[in-house]
Image 1 (cartoon, helix red, strand yellow):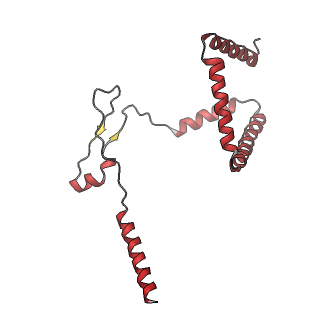
Image 2 (spheres, helix red, strand yellow):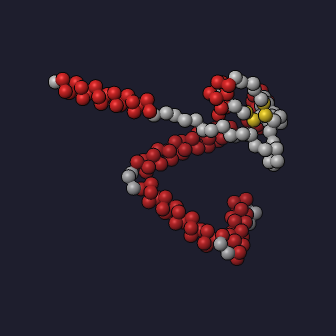
Image 3 (tube, rainbow, N blue to C red):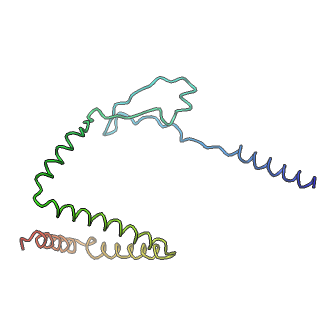
Length: 164
């Protein structure tokens, strides 16, 4: 009995020393970008004590843009109200919007179900990779095939717009 208590105490002391040995390290402090870079942002400098500087090293420098434009919520709501008042058939817009939300919800459920099947996501990833390789070879690799793709896209645009 005494030997099991000693063994348990020894194992708990080893676990405690292993926990104490584990440390989380922050990323090292990186100096701000040089002035020769293409974009320069004004830097706000804050005076800190030495201990605060070491403790807050990753958060020492903050960049801000002087061209910030505040977003006015009233302006957004008035624009939305004007656009909503300009809509002629509001019931159709509501039905289409509700249908779109239901479609997103159902597709989320379907993707979750497919993702839960063990090998199916990896197989579908390989199928997508293969199709991407075929598409690049067929339409993007050669100049003549890029022109063909551009004409196909233009024809599809005309068909959708109804100008064909």
